[in-house]
Image 1: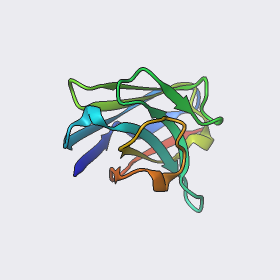
Image 2: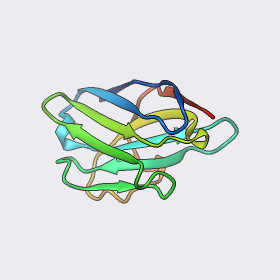
Image 3: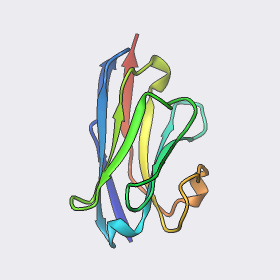
Length: 125
């Protein structure tokens, strides 16, 4: 089992920045690729970003490419999502997820084994 807890969400103005954190506990964090997803009201869960177990490879959804950066610190069992130049359409609940397996271009939520409870991000215009 891997337990995931997100933090760092909140209210931010359009054009601003926010950094989300996801702290992991349980099984060896560095064995898992990690992903970030988001879900806005009335919409399906959307892939945001993923990062390999080592942190050496990353992959982004088209809607956030060039604005968001995913990183991880395996010594701290934590993965981060740096959100820059945020837009009102970035408003959603953000979830981190862990996946056992190789490859990072994995965008389907069903491919991930463990999930956090989510943190709300609201971008005001």
